[in-house]
Amino acid sequence: MAEVREAEDRKRNPVIQVKNLYKVYRVGETKVYALNGVDFTMYKGEFCAIVGTSGSGKSTLLNMLAGLEKPTKGEILISGKHIEKMREDQLVAFRRERVGFIFQSYNLLGTMNAIENVALPLSFQGIGKKERLKAAEKYLKLVGLSHVGDHMPNQMSGGQQQRVGIARALVVNPKIIFADEPTGNLDSKTTMEVLKLMQRIVREQQQTLVMVTHDDHLASYADRIFHIIDGKIVKIEENHHSDESIFGEGGAEKQEQISDREDKR
Ligand SMILES: Nc1ncnc2c1ncn2[C@@H]1O[C@H](COP(=O)(O)OP(=O)(O)OP(=O)(O)O)[C@@H](O)[C@H]1O
Ligand SMILES: [Mg+2]
Image 1: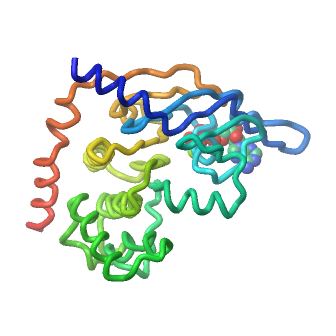
Image 2: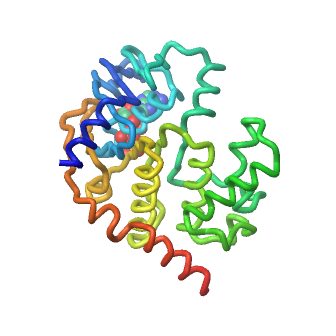
C-alpha cells in the first residue's frame, strides 16, 4: 500500500516532459530521423533507463534533454520550463545548476586529484575553496572513496575513477543526472557496484537519473525502462523490483564493504 502511494506521489512531480520531439540530421541528400516523434514524462526520484541498439537515438535523446543540442521540432520541459526555447547563456546556467553528467570515459582532469575533480563544478558556481573541498570530501565519502582523495586519476582503478565521476556529478546537488553508458568501461562486478550506488543515492536524494545503455541487464536496475527503436519510444516498461533488491544488497552496508575492502589494500 505504502509503495503504491509512494509511486503515485512520485508521479505528481514531473521533472522531464517531452512532447512530439524530432531530431532530423541532414547527411548529404538524405535525412536521418534520429528522433522520430517522442513523448514521455519522467518524475522526481525516478531511475529511468533508455535502452536501444547502436544508432537507435539514445545519445541524441540524452543530448536534447540536457540542452546540449536543439530539437528540430517538439517541446522539452524541465521542471516546467521550456529548454528548447532557451538562449545559449540560459542553457549554460540550466546545465550548471540543474544537471549532473556521468560519462562512459569518466572525463576526469588528469592534472587534478580526486577531491579537486569532484570540487570542480562548484568553482563554476562561484563557491569558495574551503566550502568546495568540504563538499567534495562529503561526496567522495558517499561513493566510498574517502581514502583516495589525494590520488590522481592515473593512480585509481577504472571503478574508482567512475565513482569519482559520480561524486562530481552529484556535488552540485542536481535535480537530474544524465548518464550515457556509465559502466561501459567497467568489469561486470564493478558495474553492479556502480549501478547499485547510483540507484541508492538517487533514491535517497530524490533526484531523477536518466541512464542510457544498450544492455538489458543494466536497464533492469531502473524503475522504468524506455525502449527506443529507430528514434521512437516503442515501449515503456514499469520495473517492479522489490525494495529488497534495491536496498538489501546495494544499501549502506554494501558501501561500507566497498570502503573497507579498499582501505585494507
Ligand atoms: N551529428 C550527426 N549527423 C548526422 N547523423 C547523426 C548525427 N548524430 C547522430 N546521427 C545519427 O542519428 C542516429 C542516432 O544516433 P545516436 O548517436 O543517438 O545513437 P545511439 O543510440 O546513441 O547509438 P550508440 O549505442 O552507438 O551510442 C544514427 O543513425 C546516427 O548515425
Ligand atoms: Mg550513443
